[in-house]
Length: 402
Image (cartoon, rainbow, N blue to C red; front, top):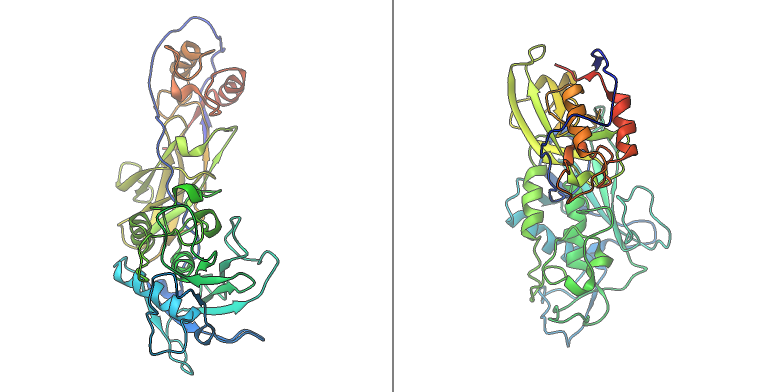
């Protein structure tokens, strides 16, 4: 993978140069790794009884007659969890993301990969939930897979240990009836089914700024009725959620960057992913540069057809790493990981005397100093010191893949 060039004795005095490299970038949302069988983008939905729990389609949620919203199903006996899912499906389907949901009538068998919607009463963390602090409210859970490891089915659970409701959102930071809005919860969980995760590892919001937020934020962080602040049951995914859902409907390459010695926020750096003709480094078919996620993962949308490719990854101050003969199918490729060998400050795919010149110039500086060179901050702690020197000296002489 990597090779070494002749090493030169390192010295922290002498050579002077200046170079400005990567700048901070905004963090993208997380995307889940699951893929659906047969590369489909159309999913069936089945309401299913679960043990002692009835079907979500016959269990009602609270509606306060004082909340200013009329029942959107006036011919029914009540507004049910199933009605909440129907409203959420209409919102996603009308967003034209490339994903479509279809309801399966009672007694009929699904013909596509399927989402089963169930009720449960669970006071413990549910195994398989995607994470976050609000996993006791509702969750998405993967189910069975086919011979290729792709999903045949998955599950959405509403945890009725909590008190769900529907109601008019208020303009201030109080809540109508202190009940979790089941329509918004359904929008959120369907987002997980189409591969969307929470935008960050700890949410991004509080009740105090929840007037215009993303549906894929953890529910309890977002407040009770605050998601998508629109009355009369018109709940919608946020524009950011819709844009991300359109990406998940496309072919994607995803994986993680193994960031040797890096202790900073990966969201402050980038990776460039290039698809190449196997065995020909000069035949670049397409490439994308994206910010990393909080955990060092990445995802890029690709346009190339399914096939076998060499895939290269490189960044602002680390060497190129190439994975050869990678099979990309109609969904893309999951778990395509790369190593980050830091120290290529000059961005010439070698860690050599030129990089040492830049490193020497910036040694002892912190962010904002006149001699600060961002690319020389190899461990991402906003200062260039002995920690960075340790990484640089270890990697000096390394050369990236062609």
